Image (tube, rainbow, N blue to C red):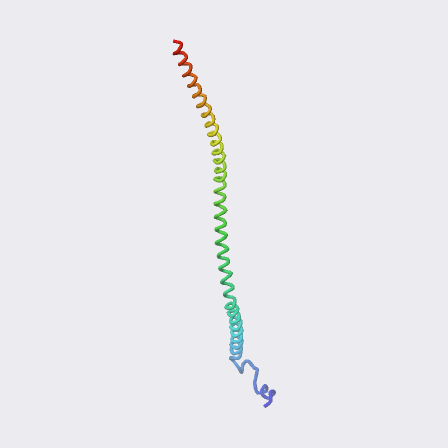
Length: 134
């Protein structure tokens, strides 16, 4: 049997083969499904191979988001503390001024105490002299 003989016996008339288009559709559908399955297996293998990388990237993205939120909170806290820092500087300046004024007051008190003591001694001498004169 030769090929021309087979082709001669086989009629390509659609009327003689009523399900030819259905068979053709089924065969083409099977071939398409096979192609899709093959491609999906390739994608699945790729995804399985890259799963660790994807998981690591997802974790890094989560950590980045967390660190960014912490940084934002820290920046807000710094902004809140900046006026307090200025107030602390102002209070330190006032404490230094108060210490300076305290030192001046102590020196003035010491000078007045010494002068009062001398005045009391002199008053005692004057009273003694006054008593001797009377």
